[in-house]
Length: 223
Ligand code: NI
Ligand code: MN
Image 1 (cartoon, rainbow, N blue to C red):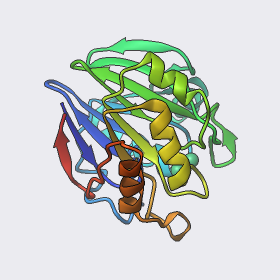
Image 2: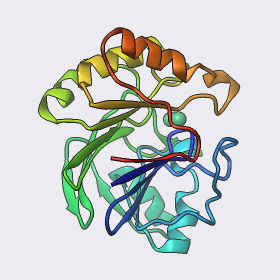
Image 3: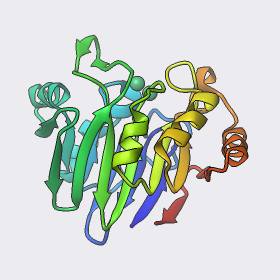
């Protein structure tokens, strides 16, 4: 399995057979190395309705015919706009051709243009014997400990940009709660309000004995 970072909270997971995009905010993302017109996708997982997460989902789904996987209310919003989406809710899981998706809680908001699109979520993605946890946008919450106890997380992707989500100190605590093999910071340096130093996050992780890695924008790693 390969994991590629497009900056902000946008990732591409590539398994032996499938390409799964998560939160593909590309065209409006000043740090994205790719445009929505050039990314491959068989599935698109969206954590919540905010523009920097729903991003270019509709354009990409129309072009590629990728199946969208998201929270039920957001799926209904997409359906009203002519797109089919697989609507789930927090705590529920479902098996897809590429693996299993389970939505977790996230402490945040979710709307598109003033329309409420259900609760925001994080996503647990299990494929090819690896489990990834993309927290979506969230503040720190104690049940991250429970998520870590119940799931052996290989890679955790979590926000560190502060203001709308956890900042570095809370994200370090989140990593301690969840206990992943590797933590990858996201949701930073896209806008002035979320400017921070991802290497400072890695240094703070090392100080508590946890492993993290900053991915360059466009960098792909093999898991
Ligand atoms: Ni958000
Ligand atoms: Mn966001």
